[in-house]
Length: 284
Image (tube, rainbow, N blue to C red):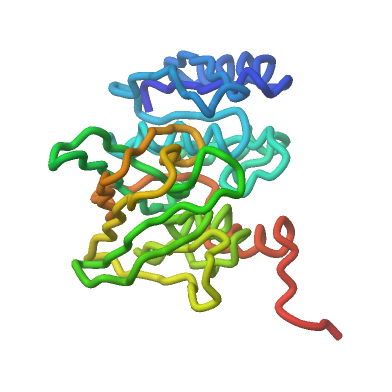
């Protein structure tokens, strides 16, 4: 390991001071470290970009949002992400701040394994022309910009029409994102080792609308039908794009994988119990 980028979430008060410790730790071990200040408080607009080319690995100091930001940029380059949790939830950022030295020493010594996580690729076609594309590690959400407003969408899978949906929106999530907004909207939780997409309606105007799980070799096509004029696409809650009537969204599982440290299957199910209060059933 020759070169590392440390992504510092400026919204987390402990991140800047910890970044100095981490960079000094890396320097002692012959690793060239550079820092990048990420404004986590303004993550929704994500007007800032960073070039991850040339780095052997990336360390994030923040919460899950910082991990999502880094993984989207690192996945196409096959760069692993070492996520130190300084947030409240820490479902993706599985390395606790009191353990980072040991975990980082193990990684630099070749004693750690990475977990691969799937991403959803979304492309927007307008009048047959591509006007937007983006990767999402958690989810892509199509909804009204106004709260609790119904929108009209047509949904198909591999050209098989699933029908029109009248709902507050639709979430297309990865297995990683199945524990986030999709779960809150009633979607299933999926083991992150599985290649799949979850389609979860948000407050559908139909009792028959249920979440659907799709396999890895297909495309979800969502068309914006006439109705509201303020329909928006949100990728990981950080990258937004305004949609127009007639826009067609093509969503599929990306060929790229995010490489995440500290995200073993054991930690995933432990997080379900400790962070989502999963109990399974009454305990003796």
